[in-house]
Length: 322
Ligand code: SF4
Ligand code: SF4
Image (cartoon, rainbow, N blue to C red):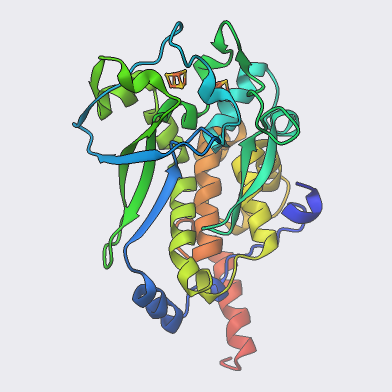
């Protein structure tokens, strides 16, 4: 992603009353908004056309599964895998290698489009010309060499994570599903566990917390896609670039916040500003709140009172209201 596409040097405050959805578009979206389901982590790793048997599960539901060295399918799921690198993965994996996220992105990832939401996401690059080779981090003997910081998609496997929004419901509900791919022999093991026990063991909770804003945006954008996108139009390439920047390159977003008019335009408490200087996870939260405001016109971040007054005065003048 270049400076040209993410536009981080050109910021002049995109949030304005222009970004509020018009009543008609809002109503159209609500009319078009049926039951929406977004598969966030699909739980499918094989590329060999194996039949997949997804089973929807609640937190307390039990399932039999165990993955361990010595199992006949050891590492099979780490070949040609479709692994999304979420914002939290980017922070953890780059720290694992002692590099900054942008370097991790360049070395190990590629940019893909999440078609349903019309937004770009980073994925882990597999080896081989067609990407069907082993993951760059798998070792025949040891298995995953980044295990303690492995991506959340890998932590969830063989579970998938989906968000569902029912018609007329404000919020969304997350649920899991179990994916049985025939190459994975872990399903034949006798270890029984509930979904919540498995997630605790895999440490997915802290990932879900930090990724919450990112998931919200993907979910909302997918939901609006039925009427052509937020405000009835596709998300602009520049805004897509900003979404990708916040998701993958937290240092670029920090420069964007501290080296443009961002802090003049938005009303952010002094103590929070200090935290944002060094805390990547908190900065991510701000980034996704800001993007929700830019993309959907949500009141997730407030403008400085003086800037807001200026904007209102400018609009009044434009419409001759004096
Ligand atoms: S990150 Fe680890 S668990 Fe995930 S695909 Fe690569 S080697 Fe496998
Ligand atoms: S049991 Fe499943 S998850 Fe574990 S190595 Fe085998 S294919 Fe991968």
